[in-house]
Image 1 (spheres, rainbow, N blue to C red):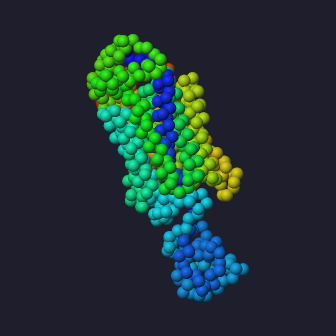
Image 2: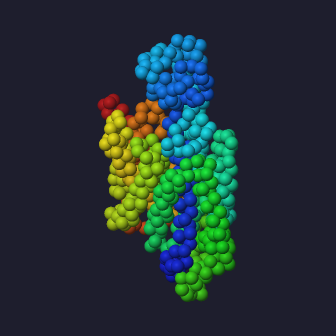
Image 3: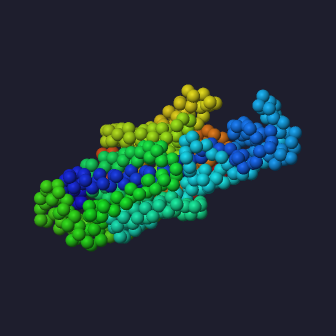
Length: 560
């Protein structure tokens, strides 16, 4: 008996599955908090050189307001430079001041020498009370720390995806989920007390590894809990809870604007997942594949009792026989690219995952740079994901996977390019249009990300599906590492990051045209089911022979 047949007898989405699926989905909310918290804890408030460090008593500037001092001592439009106040103090004539002559004084200062900030920076407290940017002074020459933090976090996610994937196959899904939760709790708590970036960065790396590892294990458990009829819906619902975490993070950050308290607020709820130890089951598939039949039978019997189902006595025996009949050959990553057709599919899918992750996190992390309230923009960016998932659930089984993927990537790409290229120049109407276009881009790329996730699972043959999906996940993490680097290209040209995101989305969407449709087709079991099985080496040799024969014929004709 195949495992999917057992799920149909057991109840594809009974009471047992519903309660545990909901429990797992709750972790998606916390996972989203940690995946995107850098938008708020690493936000860069507006700032200028700190001038309160100068003693102006006894000068004509003694009774001026702070804004007047800033206008006189800091060049207009500059954040990292100031006038050389020490030199000005030596030349008392430059300090002849009268409130009515403020404009004239500014003209005098324009001829003064400009230097870098001498006493640090003063940050606006309008939107954020304290961030790591303002507390550690990560601006101007130290601005690279923020980009590094984001890339380090995604490097941690890449590491977590690889390590937790391997360890969950060896030690089981259940224990690795709790290991991930424990590591997330420890690293998040230590990061909130970090006295410097040298402590914060390693902890942030561990957060990335822990939350990604635990999330992937939880997602695997969720999909293995339900029957084949509900598997697609379960995947989208799980991602929908991720969107809820996306939106709720904006609310939490709005009320908790000090980064240390915010980090604690999103970390401490992880303690509650320790209660799952008494309810969360191990994967039956994993137990059987590792010879732990007695434990697997206990899980199945418990599920049957909660679902009110009575199973036949030979069900478990036939399930073990089916598992024992699986191919004994060991497959490797090379099998994903061994044949021409398999290589074209694998490389196309992996590149699409990379681009989707790059654009998704690029747009998510860029919400603080959009015009308007950063908390509202972030919440809307999360809210547009839910209708994207709902539409995917409604149309994918009716119209297929490929064309919705292509169209959604085109939508996201065009919207990104337009959002970046439209001139704003302080026009509130144009600012609103750019925000709307950015949200349309987020909607499109969210839909395409969900579709390529499903298509990848349906394109890779069963024996190399875990390998193919693992490489796809690694590709997505690489896209996440590149996203903050591309966002920093705005120093060259402000529209450049969004134009690059849009261009890559259009290119990846065009490549998706080459992917086969998977809707309504049986899942391939072996690489040989995908194509004729002709290897890349054989095909290459064949093409060389054909080219040699053609060259020989042309030479013969030339001689004649």
